[in-house]
Image 1 (cartoon, rainbow, N blue to C red):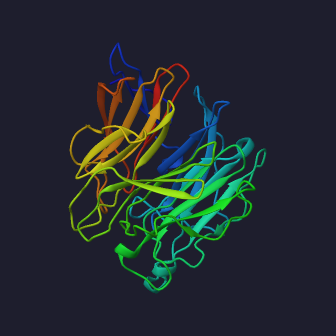
Image 2 (image 1 turned 120 degrees about the vertical axis):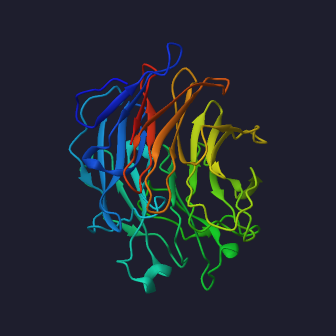
Length: 372
């Protein structure tokens, strides 16, 4: 372990002579729950939460993918302290829109009022190309209720944006009635269609788990979420929406009578998507071909919140959090897979802040950066 005397840097872990270098850094401002996107031009957009976990702000900053200092952070939310970090899975998600616009979605807080929990807002803001401030936040919940697990946002360079979340239909409350909803924009997040259910023929979503969405160049929407068609059924489901038709593919099974408070990741890989998720305290990953390829376990037990990154050599970094839970912080673990999905190196890092997880990206030289 080599200490780096630089602000926000934790240390550099040299995986091995044959594997890519993995650099671990602290999130600016001591922030938590980082999420990022990298533009084709090599600019890293980072968002994170700062402040009271029950009522915090979302901050945004940038830097070159090669490295260097972060830009002065700006606040995303137009209403102060309107985000929530408690629970780990309700923070901000980010997507890259047309001409480099930045789209952000997050669960809004309800001021600690239990009577308002059924009506928690789903908030969106965007930074237009060349802009310095985000648009005023807007609530996209529509007539859906009981927002719990985190939402996701996906976009493509045609100006199409999809906001995806799970909620109860009006008048319903239980998990087995919950649906995955989407709202679409064709003007780069300026306006959105009405909420539309995606899985009404097979309802049931694990209430306090977040989901992850991807919008392809041809407007195919892919959503990875944890189903709950029965009280003890918690398997992961891959939803694909193409040309108005929805396909649901069950990826695994997990029989447990609780909500595991989990998150998942989707990463564009060569001609397909790579997914990573938790099942009974282990991280699973696989390529989501048609049909999805076989999956594999990666890393130690008691792992949650996987984050994916891939470099130009086809190596994939899977970073996760070990031992975290409700009001309990965890520590970093990472595994490096080669182009054939074989684990070539692994490492561990420091303890994370409470309610936090990690995110990662690849540099042009093939090394990886983990922000924690």
